[in-house]
Length: 286
Image (cartoon, rainbow, N blue to C red):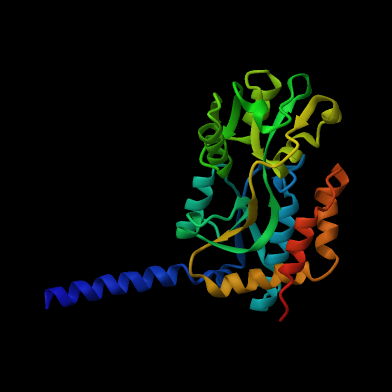
């Protein structure tokens, strides 16, 4: 009897846990709020503007998802509550513990991360690169040898850099950092030779600098493949369907290209063939 009661208790807790991870739409219907996590220093994907408002490519996509949630629930409005989260661990934990409903920044889809969270349709594709000063530029992977490189800890780019060290027997000294701003400060002060991150991130870090083209250089080829998507709670199939439906509707028409142009194109980053193909392949019909 005690064993049976224990089994029943474990099963009930398991079902309760699964239910807690599958009620985003219900909670939004009750509160009228969609809780969004974002990276505050990752332009042009997500960042704080001069007025302290969350803006960027990923933020625009999440606003569209919020509108789709409002329509699905037949609410007059859905308020978006933004929560800034910097490290990958903080972002994933916030999804896991229910502090946020969706993470709208720049998160690479990996199988290991899918053990903890689910992902929407892909939203962007980029690759790891290294930003350096033109006076001592790092143009190709061989230039990384004997350099000191800043990289965000716990990211896929850190893994890429460690593999580069191992495979090529490079003598690279990694400086683990906690924010994009820290990486740029170290690079600008000459305390590191390069700052490694996703190419999309690095473009965003320098686009606000009027003299960026004269001061910085990017590695000429990507060092990895980084598909981005929005993180959501595992098992929340109803919420994921609403989010995927919203993204697919954007990918089916010109709106996504206007959003891309607004956040990437105007800063000299043309729409790549691989991103264009991603939009077309994920324009899932009803």
